[in-house]
Each structure stands twice: as structure tokens, then as C-alpha cells.
Image (cartoon, rainbow, N blue to C red; front, side):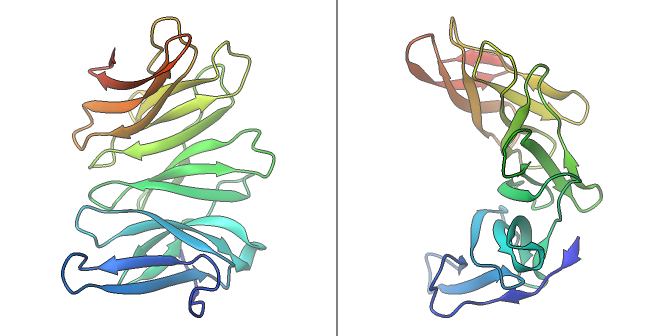
Length: 218
């Protein structure tokens, strides 16, 4: 993880990340800025205690490629880098304890987008793909960062997408489909990792789903 220069823009002429501190009381709004004079930045998620945030910024030091950053008040924004062969890094979610970041890396072609997991000890690690699929996207992570959910797509599959659950022990495991459906996507996970929410079609219409104990419930 490398330190980067955060440059505030003036009066928000373009998109720039904001943090709202002590919301609901007196509160104040702080501008996070961008990475190395990049053009725009966004914040997407925050830890349970509000001390660590995850965001994405165009990074001026790498031709405005997108980079995920981890932000704290003490350390500012720090880029988590990228994986070999990939240009852009998007942030999606942070674990409740603030130690694990998830998102996806991609190139402009979006041919082999890949979900990732980042921790201080491991750095940025690609999660791979479901068997037969060529793209993967992380959507959420549980409180302690041990379980990640998302979706796989692409490849020569009869389905357009399939929800997955990832752990270090099992790797990426597909969660299946509803009835005769061909699509399923996971969007969120409970703190304890036991309940996953998402959406799937049943061959004709979309349905909201709960994956409870890895079983589908409408």
C-alpha cells in the first residue's frame, strides 16, 4: 500500500468524495479530494465505527486510471494498487471491522473483469472465476471480511450470471438458480455471513431472494 497525494478541488467543480462526520448531531462535511490530481473521486462504503472508508478515484499519476483507496482521518487516502495486467480498480464494499476491501479490477475492454479482496497483510488478491465464466464481480463482504458475495458472468454458459459465495477455504462457489431461471446475482450479506440477499429470474420474471444456509428462498 503506497501513500498518495490528495488534492482538494475548489467548491466541487467536478465529482469529489465527501465524508460527513458526526451525522445527526452538529456534523461537518470534509472533502476527501482525489488521488494525485485525478479528475474525480467517489466514496462507497464505511466501516461500522465510521473510521475507515473505501472509495475510487481517477489517479493522476497513472494517466487517470481508476484506483481504489482506503481512507482514514490519520492516514488520508491510500491507493491499494492494482493486479498485473489490469488498468482499473473499482471499490465496492468494506468489512464492518474496516480491515477488508472488496471490488473488481478491469481493463477498458471488460473482457476478464475480476473480483478482488484486499487486506493489509495480503495486499490485493484476485478471487478468480466460477467454472466456465470469464468475469466476476464482488458485491459485499461480511463483518470480519471472511465471506464475500457477488456474481459471475461471461463465458459459454446458458446463464447470463450466477451468484457466488467466496471464502478462503472454499474459493468461489456458485449459489445456483431459481426454478428454470438462468440468472442469479448476490448483492449483500449479513454481518455473520449466514444470510445472503440477491435477485434471480424464474425463467420469466425477476424475484428478490434470500440465500439462507445456501438454500434459495423467495
